[in-house]
Image (cartoon, rainbow, N blue to C red):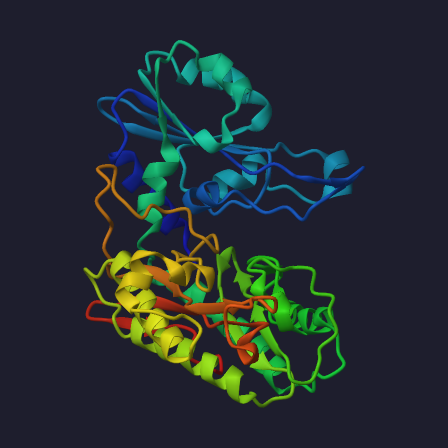
Length: 412
């Protein structure tokens, strides 16, 4: 688990990147209405959580930097027996002071008044532009220079600590139990949502109370809809099922895709496409090491998939020309992978501000997910391949001299 000391060290590291005479404000997430008087399950804002480890709403973190010092302040929901009767216990100011390694802690009802005091003589204000809150800006409208704190936190989140890697591995291990169980089930005649239920049951049974994202269980031609989440089709003998499902453990994500046959054996055209995608995935994973660029992985994956599709008669022509014309995009429209951590698509940059690409470094975690999608109505390809969608995805840690496949125990 991540200790209070590590959260403190993150705040200290961030503060070194801040301008002098600045104030930084980060808010917790706010509950989201589902319908009428019901709400979605609360999930803390990732950047706020990254710096505090605090899961409650109606809270805020303030970092005050002067020429000589840095002070941190946390605002929390004050104790209220009526609110707690309905919505559960709150930590309150008294217990928060015992838990957090933070200079000052106040109740959230004092935020506005304290902010007016804290912001005096400050020249720069940092906050998350994607969560711009006009209410708090009224109290600091004398500050002219506004900067996005999410950019700086995003760079920090690129490199995972040992504790973060352990939590991600735990999420992946739970996800492995679910995927491996589904692989062995008799699936003919079941519905996609039954498979989804099996996956999410295993997640929750093993302590992953939240899914990292809405599970995709896409059989037959449904696999050719990349973000298919209806999960309501009956599973037919001879079809494939593309399952993209990952658990979240203590706010850290996993992201795994497996494509398996309903009948437990591949038909020859399915096997040919599957082996192509699997071969590409293995080759791209083997390329991962420090200083390699993600675009290098992408270009190699495109070349290998294009060559394979030419050999199978899906694409026709010379592969360099097909790549230049981006003909592969019809069957492989997305990237080779993405950063993963507190968010399944981690909120971290892929380029520096000068547009130079960020190369892989030890401690980064990314997904690798080559794929081929061929719609059942695509008359440009041989009939036997129509209606097949295949994606294979693993979660990879960059090590000092190569990589570690964190999801190696999920069967393929």
